[in-house]
Length: 250
Image (cartoon, rainbow, N blue to C red; front, side, top):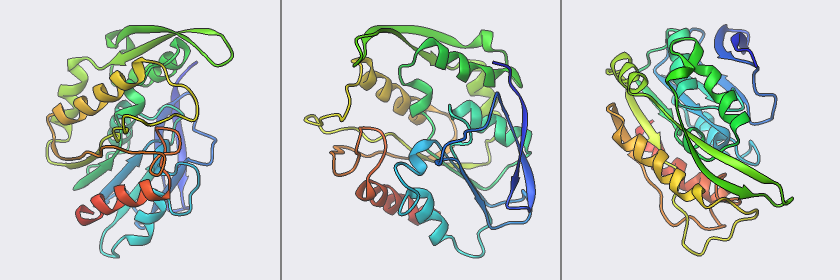
């Protein structure tokens, strides 16, 4: 895998750059703007949960339909298969975007357990401003998948150099951070999750709370199958709960 600068044309208004091996080709990649330049008031940057199972009534759809005309926004949902805090950092720096607010749900993809091949795909995003040699990789567990294949699962962590650089680069920006909802104790997954899933979920949420930024962090507890259909992505009710908490701050 070789990362490169990739360009995407936003509604024939202007182009933006990403640093990755390829752009996400799935339906949950969505970009929207109501501004004819990158001088925006609000950047909204989501992973796959911005769209979840369908665009209609998703968090992205709800935000687009509620934007006030005087607010200039750029909304980016899952531009890369592995969309993380590093993706957001690269995007803002490469495109010289410093809005008043950033709305994001980064943190889940960053810290959830992954095969090494997926970790490596994430780490290539280091190579524009940092070095992937700085990344901290921890073995989590041997996991028996549903097809009886044993997988070695790992988690990455960010070096202090990344956190301090992120904090100093965007100290004047207000971050509205949507933490990963905690699941009800009796939640039954549609497909099995490894034991390390819950620890990693908490790690991502703790990272978001401890990030030294100007921020509001939104926590959600006791999600059931009414709010999330797979323990990660949201149902219509889950989208509504998250959007309702977020909308007064937009």
